[in-house]
Length: 394
Ligand SMILES: [Zn+2]
Image (cartoon, rainbow, N blue to C red; front, side):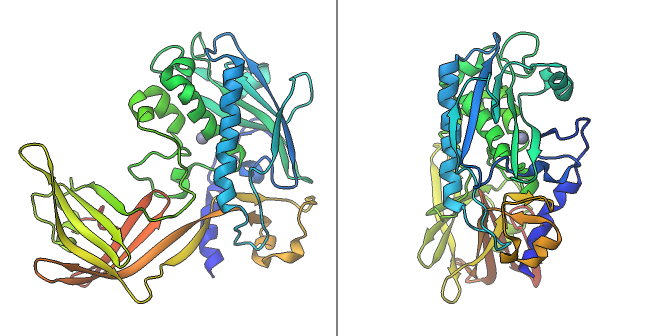
């Protein structure tokens, strides 16, 4: 039964609009069912790429190539942590290829088009370049070998086709020493490796994620957002950090206030992890602008303290009967009837236990669900189930 629940995620394949070009697809979605597939899976060992740079693109080719290799390395590193997981019983591995740069005169798998659109077909596919920071466009797909070809387009940072909301000209070379280019590239490469927009797969929360649908646009139009990134972490892992700070208590009517018995004057709550559970602390800024933190209760995890773990696939491979990559007798029949496989997934951990407040010794059932870059807290308050107490009203 578990698989059926996860499969609901795939509905987004059906929600998207159609495109004018048969075989062309961009940024995770159109009528053609395999359009969100990774361009390459493990049967493809080598990928060739080339770079075409236009005159209105401020980063030179060598620097751009360094960032391209860094973006490839970034995804290899993160996918390596989760490759091999699969609820469909057949292992799919992502970002395992050797990428080699070559001349664009050759027949290459992947063209990086830095500030240039090459022909009428590309121009009419992109339509309004000034409204677009970047796109990963798959132009053909081999249904036998499950292998795609295409180009990644990145907006010029000056001239008539420059993305209109860029904070200034020459953002690619000047801002954060080329890091903005790397961030945008990492997002587009994520599509190439089969990732869809994160905000379609997981509830959006206060931290931006590299695969959020508005990530490229927001970082090139708001330098403050970009400056806050030390590095990009797609949060494929699921380690608990020792301290979880959960938002400001801007909503005094949130169920959390009553649940945890938080004093009216506290502005934050945070959870400090230890082996038995969490210490829950209230926090506020005092009159001399210092944080004043005090314990208000603790969460103890029940029984053996082991969480419930669920896997959520983040890559899907949709195929036809033409495919020759997998022997489908090995896997789970449900997926074969529906002609798709699940790729690597990320894990959600849910801890269950009790919350006990220090002041009045209230005890309430609580559960804390840790999914990628989000913690959702549920519990029972006055005989009612609360699913997301930081966001639900009392
Ligand atoms: Zn995107």
